Image (cartoon, rainbow, N blue to C red; front, top):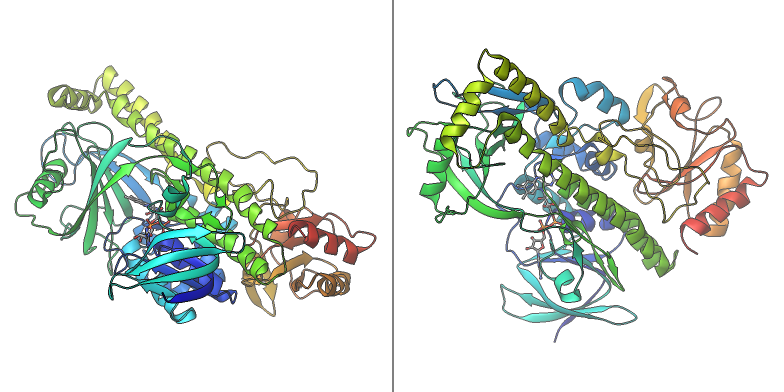
Length: 587
Ligand SMILES: Cc1cc2nc3c(=O)[nH]c(=O)nc-3n(C[C@H](O)[C@H](O)[C@H](O)COP(=O)(O)OP(=O)(O)OC[C@H]3O[C@@H](n4cnc5c(N)ncnc54)[C@H](O)[C@@H]3O)c2cc1C
């Protein structure tokens, strides 16, 4: 049987597998991604790409195209809770509440201070082709669609996988040093018996992706997601959600939309198009004349699971293969990109012989706690959704009682005023979904490819609305604006793919860095800020955030997380830097 040899085999070319392919290609690592489907997804699924993902995309030259295709700021200012889109009854088209989201509205100034990148919204069925094109351009022949991994075996030196080519009907073997499961949890983890912790089967949902003109019923171009709660809804989520999916207009004239709703136990024709459209019209109070063109109906289960282990010898799990949770704060694919950003440079160094295999242990010790926290967070957010129904006094399926509860809510009575005040509190807690700024960019690693400096873990906002920038080893490099020759750049712009970067204030670090690079073989870019340095801290933001004195330095890894810092200049700076690199790389 034919055998292909490649350093890294990736099972699955969804967002996670394609992302890893691109990042590895940028680091000069050959990989092969096999995808059992013939094409990228035809379902929108993931929508929101957060600030951190756009930082990763910017580092790898993907951000401009994603912004070009994605939703502009004006189209994603807030999310809105309503009773319906249409209808002219007393309870129709009522506003239940609005929430600024994903850096829009009143959140903007804070988000802009914390990152050079804003979030955007680009449905997965538009993002995947973009990533596929980039992957094929950077790694020609490195992605094979309609090729399925059917089995694999690992030994001490590598992994041997059997691949079925669905076009030719032939099978071939792939021998790789590592196998990355980016398969959404469908194949590799199951074969390994990977233990997933957390609740499953919390809800059954159905998404309907359709083309249709809703412009006569939409009154706010800045709303990205609508949630509907009305007397006819059958419990949490049951009123449904509506997300605009463009692809060219991102206002009320969006050409396509996704409507999501919970399946009720008595929905026997759940996937039937006529049934799905009729139910959508009923819940949104749209007339018969609204005839959407349904493109896809998809079912998904709400769950909140995370793999206990991300590493099984030469096999590593990433993306949905490692963590699957409610999309409340849109952290699914975004966390997958965090996984591959963490993994790519480590694989590159290990495959190049510059770091031992033990460096890959740090992928699990750094990313598993992030996955676990994200899943826990998303479950909190998911549960909080029922508070809206509870605050209004809604009970699943009790249409008449629910109608009375709504009438009370909008009544000019003391009971109505109390209900509205309680609802306002319940609405406020919903910020856990679209305002999870610190969950998006504030995650830090406690144990891994870093040198702890003995400082305590700083406090974090338990509601994740506020992100506190720090340079403590393990943290994401804070964003600061620097100027060079009249041009403004963010600190993240100075960390090239695959490069280590030392941020300091004294030119003396240059010689020390050269010496450490010679000994360790790790090239390090030096960014000298202030004085006679290359970059000026014109806004003073670096000084405010760097947490080092004028002689100190911050060593940043290729994934823009801090590996080491020294508050002041050490007696032997070259030796200190050399030690730091060796410790971080587990040499
Ligand atoms: C309604 C909804 C809304 C969401 N919104 C957001 C959002 O706004 N933002 C966000 O970040 N996330 C969101 N998510 C989550 C997001 O969609 C997922 O986290 C993400 O798409 C997972 O990507 P992945 O590549 O890890 O897995 P998948 O997309 O599942 O890709 C895995 C791929 O592996 C392939 N595969 C499996 N087995 C094999 C095999 N044996 N051989 C070859 N190929 C194989 C599959 O065919 C598949 O293409 C949402 C999810 C849902 C359901």
